Image (cartoon, one colour):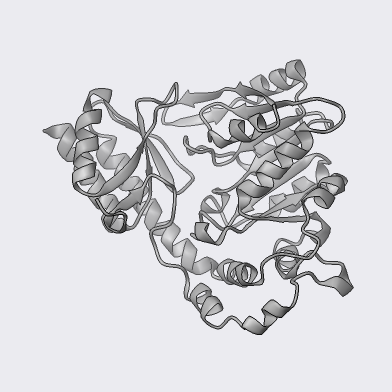
Length: 350
């Protein structure tokens, strides 16, 4: 099976086309600007892109973080805080979450403890009280929150997020992974409120998911002013990549293009819920991201694998404890989603 013919719906990547602005930004890029750093020396700014983000989100430029994808900022933050002189190497992460969280903590011999996500009807939820009790008991250096969470797809409202933050002492650093947050809403005004109210938080976003540019490797984040020591550690003194920054700005200026695609994904998400949710033994969970989690009769696994392979489709068969009878399927183009639904229905009813 050639990779070029494969429908990859197992990686949470982007199966649509970039916006025309993104295409034009690359096509019309002035190569002469590569002769100059992107750092804005005379204004003390990190880069052209950080200044753009400061204006877009109405947040002080000193509170902007940039990285080689969102996971770069995440990795830097975990490594930084778990290796400070106080020796506290404990990090709390959500159960049923991205395996990478524990992996990057392991790289600095971190002590990872999972706090539970609770299944309720057709979704998963954070339990504020349980998390607060674990924080009080374990006294972690870092608490990581994912909203929306991968692979369960559940998210937190700004009010729920603030409620959690109020339960965490300021001596504990809070990392909020919002890689998929743009799928929920285009209202990000809460970010400024939170980073200015709390002295211990970093909110991490990326161009990889909603804006469909995982190959660009451009992430950004926002932090409390009190965490300037981390900014000094993370910041690239001479700036970043001019080509990536130009494309990133074009993507963020193309919100309407990507909102239209998100609307199509919502239509297909409803089709998954209605059609597959009606099958015996299947359960489709609510998702606020570009993927959907589905529980299925485990005895169908061999037949499903064979059927998807024949049609050159790859989806994620989960094998983690607690969700090892589940599928995670990236929301692709509408014709791809239609095909996936038909394949599953064919196997389930044969």
